Length: 133
Image (cartoon, rainbow, N blue to C red; front, side, top):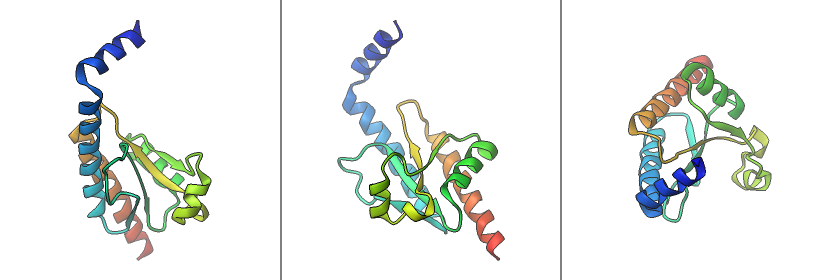
């Protein structure tokens, strides 16, 4: 019953509309994170033919630590590490620094949640800058 309801919802919304909305939110997240000093984004220049996933790091912090801070301090879900793709991380130069933090945007995320995520990463990056002196 749940699967059928989900499929009906997708059919009503349309895959293209769902994808377009997810990419709009991803663009908003990307643009917000770009403005934060000490944040490095990966593979986010062109979102054409892209899925709604964004990878980043905060300078001086391992990705698992950033993900833990997002979870514990801000109640934000993310994923950290090599994401079952160690060769991709070797290519990005992130394999030696525990990979990256990844946000995945879905059809039920909101602009307010994106704003919250950007503010949380900004707070974490500012904390790291203060710590480094």
